[in-house]
Length: 178
Image (cartoon, rainbow, N blue to C red; front, side, top):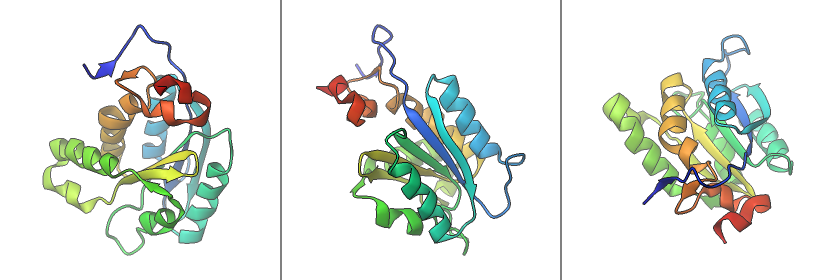
């Protein structure tokens, strides 16, 4: 049966959080703070946190920096996934992704539909892999970040999740799914 197997050891992932916004600051970034709270509360390590403007090159520069750092296993971004003219997160990140994770978008929208209904259509949330680093791009609302973490990522990034966790695809933990 799928779920967390409490008899297995937990292996923390090193997760970086990127907020994409022209207006948020460390004091007003509730979505980024929620993700940090959730991931550290789950036992993972915060590998970095940054806020960048809704500019393609600013987003790419930060993502490239973290994706090239062996101390970062996963990047979670929040913001810039809607349809407003300044929402450019997918345009910035998709060209960097070598492998799409279509299932993340499907599961995120399914979870989000349960809380915001058809408004989930206004999100271009997606996931993938840049070299060995996984990246998940969530909308900027705290509700969307809560749905993304609580209903999808929190379990999938837990090394105890069975039949197999995404943690087992992180190079230093590949033996978990062997």
